[in-house]
Image (cartoon, rainbow, N blue to C red; front, side, top):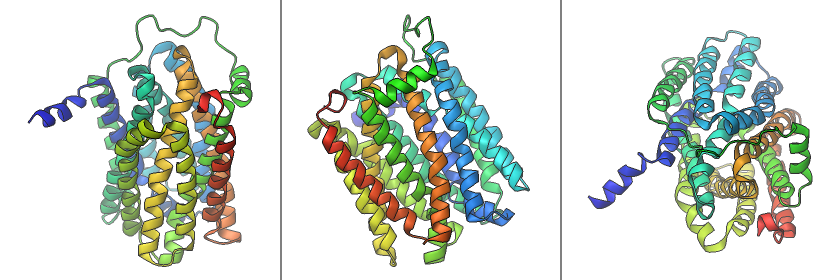
Length: 397
């Protein structure tokens, strides 16, 4: 009873409430993830056009992530999160109603604008956690993402058997319900007096600092390259499963659910324990190497058992990578610029999400269906080698 009480009380804490908010939001996002490429093909999109539609989401994130981050620093995390939930509800509705590639593209841009505010959720975690618990807190947000991918694709696969548009309408309804829950239950996390600087720092100055600072630059570049590699896999995996294994949307939904289960285990349970024992930098390096190995196993798989082994390793190791890099970036930032710096990090991730889908889909269509996976493995291996060289620097120590 005591343990159950402690478990239940977590959901009444600020971290527990934002965790629930992110889970419900990501259920809506994960619900459409394995279906969107196939739905775009149904409308008439080629693999390259699917890459453009996917990249449009990232373009919007690139432009709006720093804006949302700065707004959350100046006006609070709560209003930014609420606006993003409302935008997600409208965008998912438009995707379901889209009857042409142009309308689908517009809806994805709106979805990217709304989704760019996830840096505010990360800044929220930074507000309510101590530095020693930062990686664990970021891991909880990552676990919320993973749990959304566990439930979302499964629900999407179920509803797609009724009508291929229905998952998008369900996602819209979930985002609207999440807006109501967050409006009622989500408190503001900014401490009284923790206001942003009076004179806003120019965006170019922030970018220059992130790309040249001895503390932040290695982390930002590692985040960019690893995101680029992961998104290339993410964009083409549903098409890969269709071409190599002839999997249906339902079967792809089940595979994404499996990935989500592994990600929840990695970020919700594993990362806090291994970071406590070995530290963020060592765990990050091991995650880079494990993700590279997982991508290679998926690339060479022709049997389900090998595919599942590769996906499990990929999901667990990448969960360690993204939790630790985000935590280290947060620790390198000052308290009053958490939203701004994490927003910039999200913007850099958005830049990776622009180029990766375009390159991955071109390679998929014109070179080979496994080439985006092999390229991703090489890039993660490069990140592991680069992290070993800079591990002694202050932000990675």
